[in-house]
Image (cartoon, rainbow, N blue to C red; front, side, top):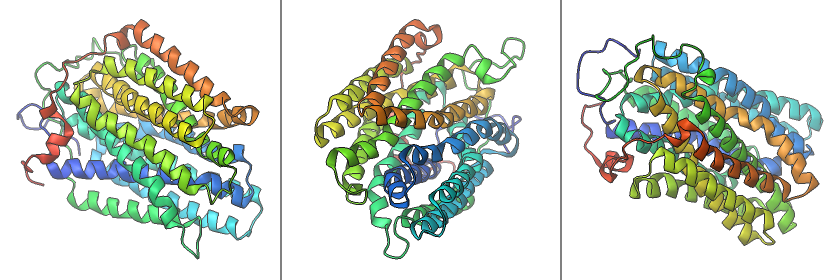
Length: 440
């Protein structure tokens, strides 16, 4: 259990190498399953006969469940500890993937009508939103428990980069898991096995987080000066939540529309498009990872800089995709937009973390997790725009990103979202190279 009365000790310490590796594994495994599922979902939907708008809507109920459950899980992590909540999230992810795989297998064999398969798929995926959402705020709070303010931006970039690792690998691996017997359901069963392996690793090897006394320079939580309402009404955090919601909505819309765009531009069957879709998504994921584990540390970027550069690059990338006439231009635009999202996500995550006290890290992590989940509700609307005109959702994304660029300059909390940047030696990559001090 996370303890508020832990023995006095040094200011928040750097995570041991083993703990960093496990946290990376938890985030990467979740991303692996999500992006792997997104990459095969267009082929699944069109092979079963589910309309495209209904295919992307499969994520909607899960997104609602994620947004509702995330703050609850964040509070639970304060009470029961970060590690148990990570395990609950991985278990929910595993069960959801197994059920989704079974439903897809039934659909491919035409054991039920496409409408029934859609409903069952929707409900199976919703389990991930309800229970899988437990791991996201727990991992963010775990990292914040051990990270001083001057390293917070780099640590959140590390966490986002861990998710990026999964997004790089997921689309490439998913086609390899299309086995002869189970077909397109194969990737889902395989992702469930990966989640099971990570669940065992967390249970066996990850030490529980112990909240240490606040480090020097960390605001004190006095109760009389800090708002007591929910985070979505907290003026310190609301601008970051608004910014994060718009950014996450645009990124999700682009990811879920990309597969259909590539299928239609190439004019090939859904199965034949799997390799080009995987390549495009991998280029985007590599660009995001380059931002989070390379450029941010190299230039010692602060949250304020990330908030601005992120949406500027994302706007340019979406414009490039909107005007693209060939596959290569689509990939280049998607990679540029992903680079921007790779800046923006650590920007609003670290900015919101730095805006609150050390005792409120789990609460703000829950609010950010809710924002990152609920955005998928609007994916069907973007898909309807796509059916109207292929460029429409990407032009809308560009307009929203430009609006967020203006917001980053005009909003007081976003304009002042600056902390002393960490040096390269403070980055998570350097942490991985340190000796495993503190034991297991």
